[in-house]
Image (tube, rainbow, N blue to C red; front, top):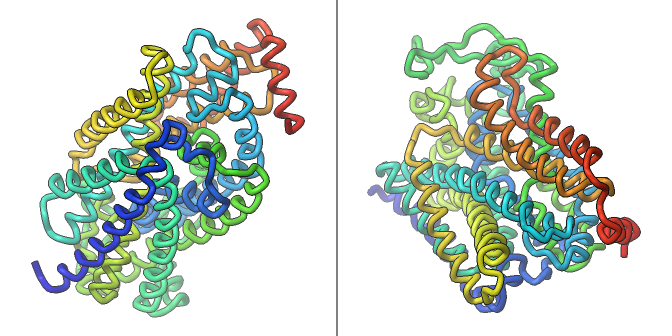
Length: 527
């Protein structure tokens, strides 16, 4: 191991040690009760609420997946996705956060998302709770796998060690940390990690732009690639049968600009719909200490999101220009596949920063990964232990038994996620997009109708969840393969289908009970 590599490793070890210290600091309070462990006792302040929500939401794809998309095919896909996410973030904080915080308390002090839905409809037979918990387990296991892929790619690229070994090391670290501290430690460290992530993005975009000759030079060179800097067109790398971009005379080849229609734009912007069903974000709304502080949290969150997304996209563009003009400096020949392109942030960091500083910037990727994977693991484990084990199978289970079951479930989920992440050619952006669609279509419409339509029935809720989740799989695996207008992001048709089912089934079934309607009106009036 070279001296530079040792310095990078040292910086990352210091960062990881700081994360562990946070876990230890919060371990005692977190383990005092299941409510503390899962929701932090509803004690989060506005800064921690905002930063932890966005850091856990963005994950490693912000520093690897999104720049990788921009690097590979230019501005359009990455930019429209980012715009959709920014709009979705704002609307979610604006209309969902306050009412969910209030309603979760009215719904018998619900501390998990499945519990909220179940209590909202005053279930006796816990059908909604069981289904919601099952879908959370499925999609968060996939989500956790995407984070483990990020860890594997990061450590493998940095240290030249086998991907699978490095992926497992990262997974074990995240698992131990999550078991130790629960929601409080997760939220506190996510606050720190949100700061690390945005600093890392800022440092790399500045040094990258300077290395490329300045902002004007980046734009000028990008225009030379057909469709690369076009909001309504797409760059098309020329690839061989193995999916590797062809290089001639030291320059990667691009084909003609591909068209980018309005349907594709709506498809990419549909990412924003996912926020209404994202448990890791919705739980922060439920966990803030005062409803009135959500306005401050919204402002903090939006500033962080807009800056982070814009910079992440630009890093991909800058990286492509540097790789084309200085392939020997940036090792552009190592970024010739769609999967490898997601390492552009790492390549820029190690090429243009002193090793010790590069290590701390690399910690930004680790920060993004940890802040998300600990959320995913904890929410998925709570879905089983709290909602299925205690809510359905063993209603008399003590807090201690629930906590034990949570830790067992964490281990099982992590093992399954490791198996899914074994393929080192996985494209992080694609793995995340599927899980994102799953949550957005399964819970997004139901969350909106539960909060804002009094006529929503239990049967409508069940139909909406099953229909939304089922359509995600059907569209992704079958319908999208037809191509043409059907090759859109599966979240959009699945979200619409789920919404239709909720309305139709609710209107065809008996109206909610008087007690459920009274709950709805009380929440609406701010009681």
